[in-house]
Length: 142
Image 1: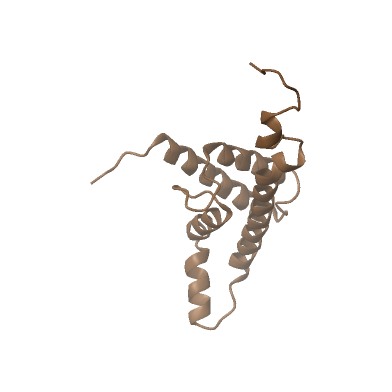
Image 2: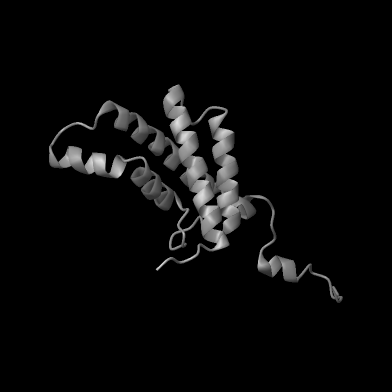
């Protein structure tokens, strides 16, 4: 039975499709994802993914670093290629190895951005809850 996708699922699918397009473009151009135009495009997608609230473990759909890696590896045929190479005790073919390296780069950036994003307030003067409630004066703040 067909189940309609939620708006959140449609946004997550679009983010994954855009990530896949960027990875494949970088692969064709044999350029690293860490350089323009790829890095700014990837960060924009990360920011969109973060705005959905799906960049954490246990999110559904899962746009955490692990979720993105798992989904893209499957879509790019790397999951089965890795499984086949392992079972045959063979090396991963060069075309798959190049894509795998790009996914590792994406994963590393995604994890670093997640870490930084989660800790932003801690380093940018956001008052703690106890500080926010009291300024040391004896008057009403309302």
